[in-house]
Amino acid sequence: MRTLLPLTALLSGCAMSVSSSAPDPAPGAAVAGTLVVDLIDGTSLEAARGATGLALEWVHPLSEDEALALVQVPDLAAAAAAIVENPLVEVAEPSVAVSALGYPDDPLWPQQWNMRVVGAASGWRAGAGAGAIVAVIDTGVSPVPDLASTKLLPGVSTVPGEPSAEDVNGHGTHVAGTIAQSTDNGVGVVGVAPAATVLPVKALSAQGGGRSEWIATAIDEAVDQGAHIINMSLGGGYSGVIANAVAKAQSAGVLVVAAAGNTGREGVSYPAALPGVIGVSAVGPDDALAHYSSWGDGVVLSAPGGDTRIAGGGILQDTVQGREGHAFLEFQGTSMAAPHVAGAAAVLWQPAGGDPTAVADALVAGARDLGPSGFDPRYGHGRLDLAASLRALGTGHNGRLFLAGGLVALLLAGLGGAGRRGRGAAVMAVTGAACAGGLFFLPQLPLAPSRWTVLLSRPLLQWPATLLPEALASNPVVLSALVPVAITFLLGPTRTLGPVVAGVCAGVGTHMAWAAVTGGLEVWPLHGWPGQAWLGVNGAAALLCAVATVGVGRMRDRDEAST
Ligand SMILES: [Ca+2]
Ligand SMILES: [Ca+2]
Image (tube, rainbow, N blue to C red):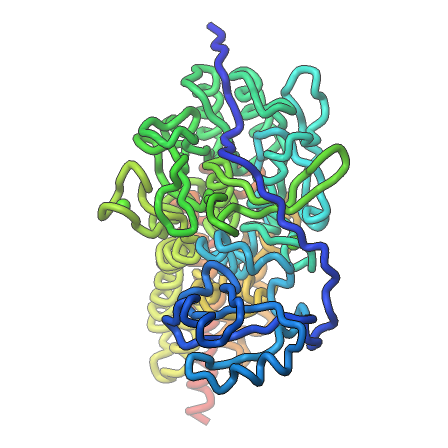
């Protein structure tokens, strides 16, 4: 049976254009005519206007609680001097242009309340989604200027008569922007997972409508092209062919995220309501369920979908406008909420070892509970919080590895008789823990994102996946005891490096043994038990290297003591 039903892009209400065409003044220069006034917290706009005689406005809807206002005046110095003694005024000074020294340097990032709410910056420090492929099943994706440094695959279209994956509607490009907008590129806005690869799959027409068979084909094709995560900001009634395609994608290890719908009533649309799909409802800037958001069975998480009735309350991304143009537009809808979750899943993908269950668990564990305590049909497990999800993943998966690596190293230090030198055992334990689980807490610290914070936050066995092409990273030679054996022979016998070498061997060996039991590391092409057996044998070899290094150090100490 072939079901025909209306599947549409879940976009609610109108888009608002945000212009940013005024030329930027030089960094450090006063912005002509703009006086910024910081008032005593709690001052009302009326009181401030009355006391200063100036037509003050809040800098931003969010700056009311800090009582930060601005006004356009012809003579900045005179206006500042006239009010600086006023008891309600803490600071009065010209607005000063700030250069792009901070991170990120995207000029419209201050307007993206949604990215701050979901903790996007923690995600950038954790690798920004590198190594994850996110299929955007939508109206297509066009390479607008603020996707210039984003990895976009050529894509595919399943819409009859529309062979190109180019987007002429604007919906799909906006969704792709939330997932992976080029970030810290000095242009426009930011995305949740700017290092992720986007696979455009056009399954909705130029008008934003689709058919169940177009969507089902798109899901199959996304899986065939290697997608790890599928985002569907679309919905309609139940379809058996879509349910089949989703089930096949899930059994191939793909995480499926979908928008809950924009009815404003109970009843989640399909495919969001399908089992195992992460259905996403929408919240506005006030963290309350958006007026348009559907809710009910099938909502797993909520995420910012925006509210364009509030100034600056929509979700701002770069998208196509007109035939050849583009614009930074504010949209609202559960369509805008779902890609925040898909982007967060991309960030978690590599740290979770590509395990979709671990990713989904971390998303749920980190979600900030809203509404009635615990799981509820409006917010699901809560509103997306990527920073907390990274913490949950760290203290969960990698935290357990960290602990196991440290304990195994201590045990082997004792077995090898390193007890006489407590410092050596301590160095070995710390190194073992750090190599097995990584310094998983690093992304939580307020550090500028760098390759080093990403590398150091991950287990040593995940470094190849971070540094090498995917085909090489899971190679059995890379995932072997080669490095532990080599450093044991080269550096193990030295006094200063011995405990570090033993710790590295213990940490790597622990992780391999763990993965041999749980199947948490993919060894290509040894799928299933051959890969796990390979990891078991190599893990045992690495642990033996640790014992041997400790033993050699102990013999050296004995020799020195007897002479
Ligand atoms: Ca940008
Ligand atoms: Ca709740």
